[in-house]
Length: 239
Image (cartoon, rainbow, N blue to C red):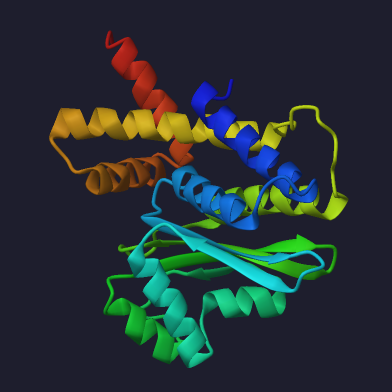
């Protein structure tokens, strides 16, 4: 079952999309909420942002969760290169494993590394064959995002783009898809397990999350499966 607060966040986000389509809300409200939700969805994300091209208006609306990402976005505009530009141009996700070694955008990578950004994931919002926006997240550690994170952010981007594309006008509560329900459930398990490791070993959140990922890799499990195992063992410590 999806955590109530997380499910409510997604439903509110979808309601924002509907309100924009009905002319009752503004795109800045939507992109701000979408950026906050993107950051919440990915455990390794330290900041997130959204750029959305409003249908029929040729107007780009953007939002970021912090000043670091805003500077990184400004650098993309100034240098005319970067993962968000490429995601928009190609319609495909762009994952930066480490800005210290990624060769694709040397000027941008070198500049944002000075800001502390080491990883980034940019996923396009597709309206048919056209890109109508980009969702991006960043981290100050290398290799912070993997294939599962790319899939998760893609699910969110796809759901929002589908509503925009359909021009949905129903007043009924938006439906949270099974896939996104699973994402929220996985995120709650990871958050809980990270908290357990923080308390048990006196770790920072970042370090505890890294320990969880390393434990999952060592046991050839997914991070959510490892998190659930740790939660179950904590709840029932008998051997």
